[in-house]
Amino acid sequence: MDMSHIAGFISSPSPALPTELIIQILEETARASYSGARAVSLLCSWARAIALPYLFATIVHESRPLSFQTTLSSGKATSQLRPRPSVPLRWGHFVRNLWNLSSVPQTPADNVFLACPNVENLALLPSHIHIVLQALKEYNASTAQHADSQSSATAPSGYPFLQRLRSITLITHTFRFQWEPLVGVQLQNGTRLCHNITHLRMLSLKVSEFCPYNLLPNLTHLALPYLDVVNNLNLDRFHLPGDVLKHRALTMLVLTVDEHDFTTNPRHEVALYPPQDNTSPKNVFRTLVRLARERDDRLHVFLSPRQGVERWEEWAHAACGGSSLWEEAAEARARDSHGEDLPDSYPRRDRPR
Image 1 (cartoon, rainbow, N blue to C red):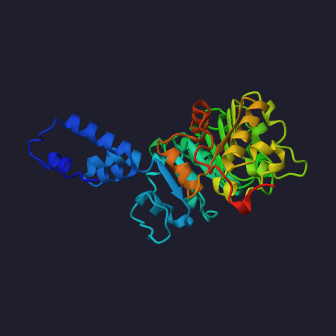
Image 2: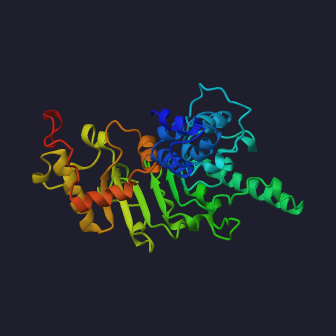
Image 3: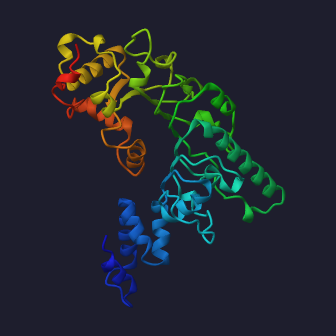
């Protein structure tokens, strides 16, 4: 992005534009995209302050714990970059969306979750749930210690830890024992962590079918992988976990279908569909959509992820201002556009019999 014209305005002794307008232009540029935020951050120190909240709003972190400092300072997760000790983790409070696949931290200073108290949308491995609890305990202990010493100026961060968290994505399957420690956990504002979660997406149910919906009383939006929930012996087309459709707060349940699996190596039972609907992937998918809605109007079926798109890329796109999975599923129903990009016929070798 060419920011030379803005840089000229800033460096000019008599700016051609009012300062207020330049600030507004910079903020809108930073808000529009990551590349825009990065360009603004390189202009000057005060422009950088405008860009930082947008530059670090969304972080995808898959490297070793010690490189999280580099992740925050570069906006990219890569173990090839060397950590920069001169750059502290002071920008973690800007993070609103965090996808974290880093390994278990060795010290509290390496705890990614502790560095991001204002996260609203969290994607993590279920095996890291205990690390979130550990971060919460560390934060509460530090807060209590500073309160006792009446030294608010040196409080751990000055931000309400995890009080903004509303959406969770579980990157792998989970078990009940991983969630039970969360039950009853209270935050500093008196609310319960589990009660604050309204959106939950599970990317895998292959090993365990456990879904913690009954531990999240205010859960309104849930997404489960369809090709996992039908992988059962009773050939139930919609073998959903427990009594999930009886959850009182639930308003939308999206069954996600991996487009690559669906079109290349489908594990769904084509025998469950009428023969006239088995003529193509598009017809099979649209039949599935129709049968789901007949089962319950809150049930949606949606292609996700799309072919050639990594799961973290899809998550990051929505986190950076794109439509969420639930918004896209609702739009597909409104437009009746389900499966419009799927093939109209099967390759001869894959035709169902």
